[in-house]
Image 1 (cartoon, one colour):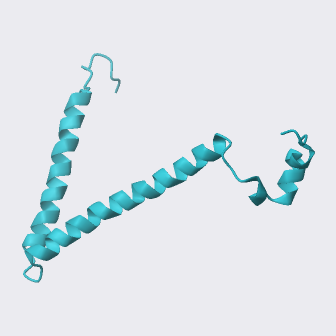
Image 2 (cartoon, rainbow, N blue to C red):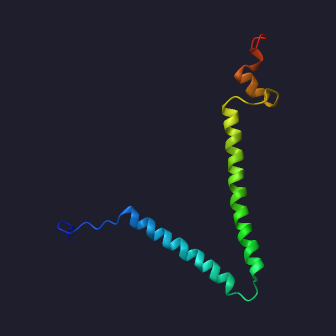
Image 3 (cartoon, rainbow, N blue to C red):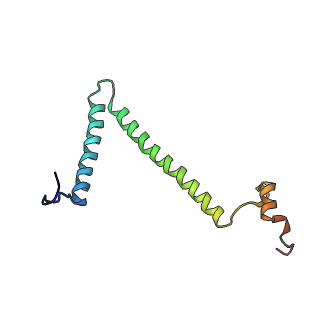
Length: 101
């Protein structure tokens, strides 16, 4: 069977954005329901665990920011020459830089 003559079925990007937004809200609703329907969990625990999740995101991004900032600093030439491995110093000929520099 061929597909000639069949209408093209394509959903817009807007449709998929709305669908994803709905699914994301549904996942959050499921998590909230799970907490609130557990008799062993009080409101304070829900609050503290939500804050903990937000703190995890902050820590993750802070770590990535620190790594990226460190790499950028190195790429811009901000590094301590004393910490360079002797083999790399020889390879880069750091010991042959004229004294006037």
